[in-house]
Length: 120
Image 1 (cartoon, rainbow, N blue to C red):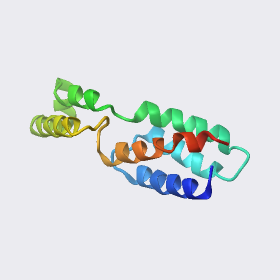
Image 2: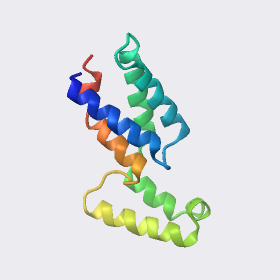
Image 3: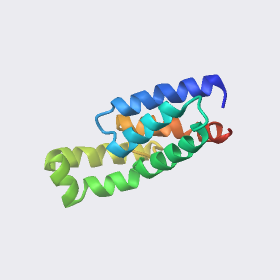
Image 4: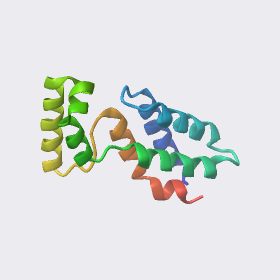
């Protein structure tokens, strides 16, 4: 992986870790990857990191379904759940495939570099 790609993914990884919506599992995988960059563990940690990111990113249809569910109302509150669902439908109509919260946006940007990351 080229230096420019590494720098970009490091930056996006830090954004992910600082996002309020980042899961604890994603934070742990992100830190493990950061710690492994430039070491003999980098390739193995990269694969684990990508797997975690792919598991964590929220597809837009899942977000809509969750926001419109009773569980979504409990998590967000009834009014906020409605606005989350409306927003998700709007961004889906504009072509979004994933949630656009700060964590998912960072993950999507990182996954766009997946092929470069795995070329080690």
